[in-house]
Image: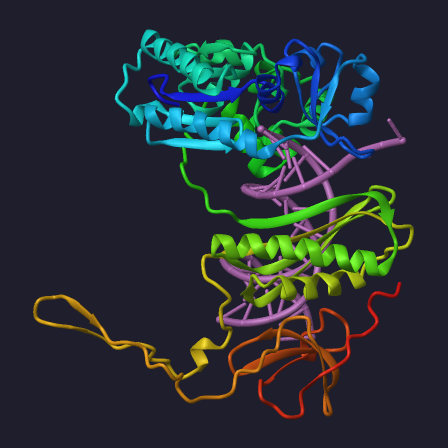
Amino acid sequence: MRREPSILHLDLDAFFAAVEQRDKPSLRGRPVVVGGTGGRGVVATASYEARAFGARSAMPTAEARRLCPPGTAFLGGRFAAYRRTSDVVMALLRELSPLVEPVSIDEAYVDLAAGDHDLSVAGVTALATDLKARIAVATGGVTGSVGIGTSKSLAKIGSELRKPDGLTVVPPGQELDVLHPLPVRSLGGVGPATAERLAQISVKTIGDLHRLSLVDLTSLVGQAHGAGLYRLARADDDRPVITDREAKSVSAEETFARDLTDPARLAAEVDALAQRVGSRLQRSGTSGRTVTLKVRRYDFSTLTRSQTLPHAVDDPRQIAEIAHRLLAAVDRSGGLRLLGVGVSGLSPYAQGDLFAEALAPVEDAVVDEDPTGEPVVEPVPADPAPGPAVVAWYPGQDVVHPEHGAGWVWGSGLNRVTVRFEGPRTAPGRVRTLAADDPDLQPADPPDWTTP
DNA sequence: TCTGGGGTCCTAGGACCC
DNA sequence: TCTGGGGTCCTAGGACCC
């Protein structure tokens, strides 16, 4: 917690619906629901007119249709338009301070202490009033709610207090007066499960929470979560505004209009998801070692299966191979409602080489310096240096070996390949490392894993 | 016509190593 | 013969956020 109210939180009001109403005047003043419009869609954003009838974010669109009157617009969403409008707003925020942390497309924190501002309550109030006016002009009428306080959590709570088009500054010294009457759900990190646990011991407000001991709180909700809530209830929050976060995972998933059982369809969906994930990894210049498959069954039960490879991958085909393997090991009877593919354990390098250290160092360029200090880089020879032939083994590939039997490639390096020979998935003794050019090692026809 | 899609962080158990 | 911890990695699941 700071001594001055220098953290600003901006939350654009009913953002997707507001952009639609801006672009389509006939929608202004009418209920608008943006989200999945198919049978299994959910609401992403409901305009305030639609909220008056009970429509809410995350509600099944079918339910919103029952609640809202004829004439309500149900729209699938135009994300490029939302992105453009968001970019305009984020640029305005960066004029205030270099320290801007976008939380999502419609939400951001700004550290005003990193800019040149009067940080008195009157000063930041004037600043926020001016900001809101400039956002409305620059976006063609989209409004936002602003909270300013001495910490992130106070700024966020402030922006929630007067929506839409609100402005709340929590003056230093008044944090606990603002916090304590609010329901515990107002705190970030308190969702339905935590709120229910707290309600069972009659803790409903943040003031109630403040009276719990650290020991009681951590025994109720866990070590890290309990310690975090203990501090937040005391307005003890020194989390910094962070401008750039490195992504930790990349994933894609799809809920099908109807549950899928056809093995060929499922395989094709895995391929398409792996393609999306791999393309995004390659575009961002990252790759990852852990491939995760997510499955939601016909009964909404959800499970994940993952495998960590010895090296990072970004190739859609390799990602798909692993995902197919993982899918083959789950029960698909009854049909699948959703499939997802993800890659985590990201590193900023392209596909690495597990055995690179074991290889003789490759001198691909000679760097020298002349007396002026000017670096001289000799051109790389046109012909690659002689060495072992590169054999294109890839994770998931099926292979056979006369000595070890049938298996599949777990990881591959420039001149070696790790193979998991058939057996229990977790039996480490079944993994063998072979020379990539081992003539005994041959590709095999894939097993018929698509058959249930 | 019940329940999206993209993420983050935490926990807990087992394997494995020292 | 009996009995250790600590630390890290991996896997699976759950809570939470927008």
